[in-house]
Figure 1 (cartoon, rainbow, N blue to C red):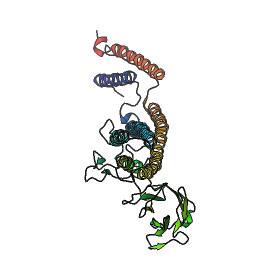
Figure 2: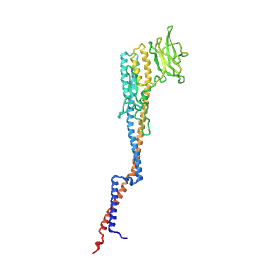
Figure 3: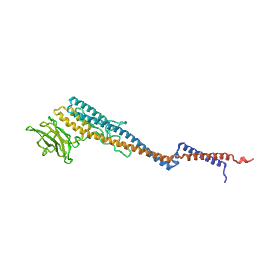
Figure 4: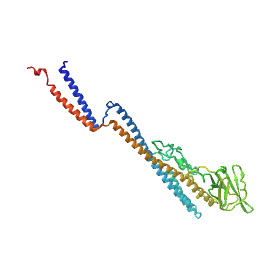
Length: 404
């Protein structure tokens, strides 16, 4: 077969160009440390590597969201801790205010301190995180979730947020807590019923918070204890206001200070000296809020009615019970926040490990074995040098060079 000189030169030049391209590609691989520079280098590895990259990107996004949630939860937990301290200070003042020898000015001083603590509690409840989101606004709804409406015609603190909170997910945590459940859902009275004095009382009778002796006997009805002076003897009658009937065995009973009255599964103690026409009212418990509890105590301390002492005793006893119930809810929320923070630490470790796994998988699929890469580069370099030398020798071969 005849091989033309021009054809031989063309084939040799093409081979040299291909070897130079392969050497350049190998050099690029060594420079980048990557075996797969484009999908055509290894389609299967490139596809698997892209999948690992996408999964790693999602996990890294979840990590950023988790860090934002953890920051908010840390600030919320700090706010709950501060709220607990404020409630404890309020409790100390409640106990101090129970001193019956306090003068009007001393009671006013305690009331003013309670007003300051109440305002601080509202400030904590309206606290925001670093991104400007409310920490206790629930599902949102307002930039100021707790609005103070205590004015001459006001009605206490109003929750303008959205009740509830985002559920914790497999890789996410709530960024705000339900402030309504924390501060606005305090059981009234002892949690089953409340006791209060009639607005027209003039005597010194007071009532304890009361207890439940048999939950199965509770009716949920309203009751009233009426006091009357019968022939110089103070007597009381318990009336079921809901059915408008006197309680059997509790009609025209001689009153003795410190007596415990029991009926329909509940019990309460009466103290002090009542006046004829005085009443004690018992009603099923309804939820209140921590801010109203403090405000009611302030109002009782500033009361100037004839039965101020009895009213203050009854109201402060109830306020103390309700305050403790509210404190329990704050502590419960703080414990839940602490659990979520612990979960955040676990999720952070888990997702960091996943990122490392995906990086390892990408490295296995894409990265170049440097030892093998250097060896291949040197082999290709020697082959190219040999081809160049061979070409230099061959290109001088010609029929005309041997014709004399």
